[in-house]
Image (cartoon, rainbow, N blue to C red; front, side):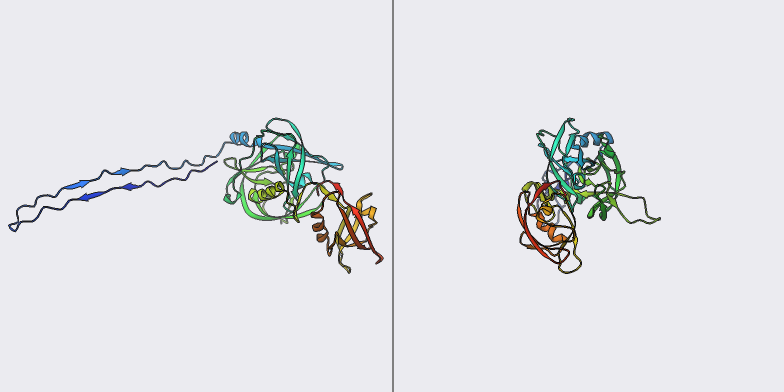
Length: 363
């Protein structure tokens, strides 16, 4: 919605005065002078129309057609979530934790009821965002994008999503209770933890399945991406009831643009996910590196000879001093890349080898 800025009315008046008649020495009665007046021009303006909140029915009618419900099977579990349509050809924004580990992702459009295969274009696990494209989608209604920077405490908001994975969009109204909040998060599918910063806190009843769905303001503008079902905070008996959280849309859109431009970075993965096949942690002793704590069966790591207890010290020519270094080195790789690896095993014996990265689910 475009807000109209009002113009102040301008009053213009021009008054031209002719000189008074000359005074005689005998001082006869004064002859009144002549005053010539220019017409007065009045410019009137219409005051800006007040912003009228949409009714719940109007808001749902505007927002629901711009979302998709998402199903993402991962191993023995299936995650249900929501996505926000950003382009008519099916670019969709959702949470990373919705599609993490998924082998196949499908989405159902709430505008036409069609089921689409969803390609994962890219994701940022640190920011908990992912970008999908619906195969063969055309002419889909898109979200009306607002500005989260204009949101304030007390603003009315509504989250709409696939609550509890029921496949039927459910609105959850509420108000903004805080801004710029930091929370610790836990992915319920794999137990991994993360910290999200700068979030919008709301008292809306956002539930699992709403994850990745829109948080909209009173006029239906998208201001946030709901992140429900994985937020945990430390609370005491006197703490208020748990709140729900959304990622500001001003934070999300630059990541969408980066993914669509094809630019991977340390946190943003674009394209298929490469797999090494190890779980690692920081090695507390010398040599510094990424200590292998688990190796997947028939993975590139197993095939090259890496076993539990080995400490990876070099990867693709980059020095590895921590697990974060290994993750950063993997961020620039693609499935099919050949990479040289150097390590020290649990007995102190050095090892080296060359491996080819497999393709796997997003992580």
